[in-house]
Length: 296
Image (cartoon, rainbow, N blue to C red; front, side):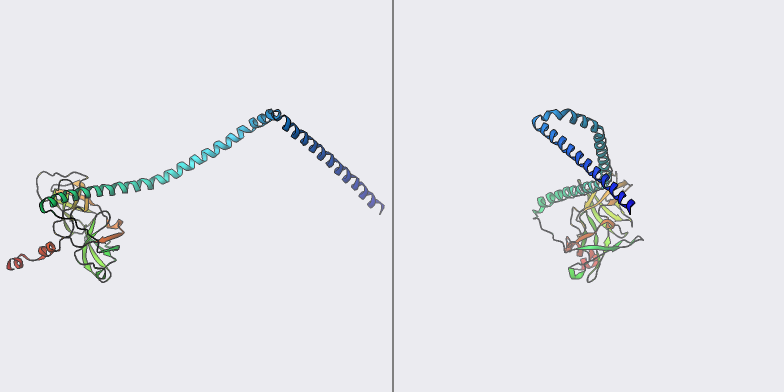
């Protein structure tokens, strides 16, 4: 039992020494801090040198961190800007093409209005769409090009009514059901549309080829006056479509006209509007056999 008591006694002395030393160090630290605090109150400039030296010593490290932070931010901005640039350029391209279409339509309408008002003193009439619906499908192959519309006879849709999108002509109603309709697209091989060149009213026919292009056939043969980039719009002849709606843009010249890319691609079109027939009397007259007309 005696050795155990001796170990506890030596351990207690060592602990007392450590505790006493801790008090001395803490007291000395507090005293030094109080002295430094008092000096900073009465002579604040005395520590400028040590602060400057400490700042100079830490400056390279802080500059390295700042450069790394700025460089990483610039790199991230460059990468994100690169990826955003593609979508922005595509959006700007679509907006420019749409603006060009609208400009050509406006020019064609202006010329048409000047001509008609000068001859007949016509008044503007507001044309409201019969229905606005979604194109729910289209033919995938073959030379026949049809689309299916989510609006039918109960929505007021009738055979022959023109169908257009925000970009231009899509086609016209071929058949109607109660809640759906079939649309004859401009690209169908049986589709023929009277058109004029926006700007000088060069008359032609736009015939479907069964693909995304139309064949522009001039009525007056001779020197081909067309050029790549010319815009063709509806002429109003035939009675189905009002004049001045964008149809196609010339991409390649031929002997009797040109090949043109349709402006309103059905594959990229979502919602369309069905409009009333522009001149129903002209449509009925064109469908009446000449023998019956002469007999009347």
